[in-house]
Length: 111
Image 1 (tube, rainbow, N blue to C red):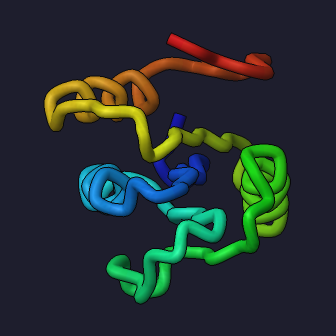
Image 2 (image 1 turned 45 degrees about the vertical axis):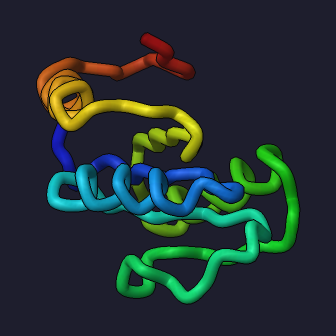
């Protein structure tokens, strides 16, 4: 899989510090956006890559992410919630897996 085929979304609700950490770790490798569900944490620390929505819960954030992937013609959408804690090393391992494995025909993947 190519990095340009992947849209990576971070769903945030009141975990801005970790959302920003995840963003800064993943952004060098993937098109990456934070989708914030009315957590009240502004301004955008990520150079315009944060989308602010009303409190639409996870289903609304997922709908928005799917719309972004569709508009950008991304065949793959990966997302992580901002309350998931991962080390730099674990994120680099995730990156390596995403860029080396074939996920063709996979509808949902969960390690």
